[in-house]
Image 1 (tube, rainbow, N blue to C red):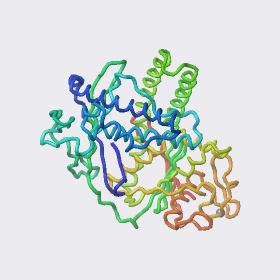
Image 2 (spheres, rainbow, N blue to C red):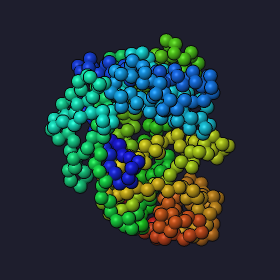
Image 3 (cartoon, rainbow, N blue to C red):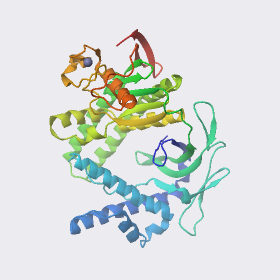
Length: 438
Ligand SMILES: [Zn+2]
């Protein structure tokens, strides 16, 4: 599943997966390996140009060059172009990380010769048929037909409405375990059009994501605290395991037998850990979206952490910020919550978190020292006292309603604080207590 606001904030895109079976590999293998060769050519030519001219080539340059290659002709031209685009996406991700002080990042590298690259097809790269898809190949070759079950393009929204999606992107991905292709998976991204959302002046909820806690504040005066220690523990364990692998890998020669074996083990272990983490993340974002739906929320406000990330790697403040950032995948959680909200007719907006954690909600006095031990906020001026993350969520709500944080009194008085915790038996969040608050 995916959500994108590239063309319109309320345009809903969803991705669905269809297993197509490992026995169709002979049809897909040559296409996937051709795509892999184009990727490797990208790596090769970029290296050459960087060594000779000390610059990165651009997308158009490589596309034009590769059009003359034989391998380019083995793919539908759009799929071939998509490989070059994906390469440049990886390069810009790498450069951004380097600029942010992540010296350990490596530029996108060669893939093994036999690697089965996921091939992307945009609109012109496939035909939609009544019973499935025809995936185009290069000119002169017949498309590969993929039959799909009835209702493959019908999506049921949380309110029970069915919508027929228009496929806009198709990918074929190979699932490889221990060098064996276990399955081929077709990923189809559907455009469900612009979804009607609730009136923008309606009720607002604001969220402050923190390592083990998600704090929520609403314009109806309710505060919620979601305690997610289990999720955090899993993520920290994953990060620890990853760091251990990285340390071992850095002592080996890149591309050597032992290095390759360790890389494979790393991928296996991380995949296993992610299979535990992802459902918990989905349960969390679903619980938040459902709460918003039930309470008639129109706009959901999330903190935009881009500014924080930029400061990573600069002094103590940055170090602390980067530690915080690297614990949870806030980007992923934010976009998950965004598409789940949109499916429920709720718009999600991202606002900067500047001053939200250093300002008192009630009177608007900015004073970082009011954040006392154990995450409690007690204002030195007016005495207002609240769990610090709830104070932060309140400030994000204030920012949406009053367009400022510092020097502005809280626009809503909070009357209830509810606590939620993770229930292992049912894999969901349960409401544990409510009390009068703030
Ligand atoms: Zn105060």
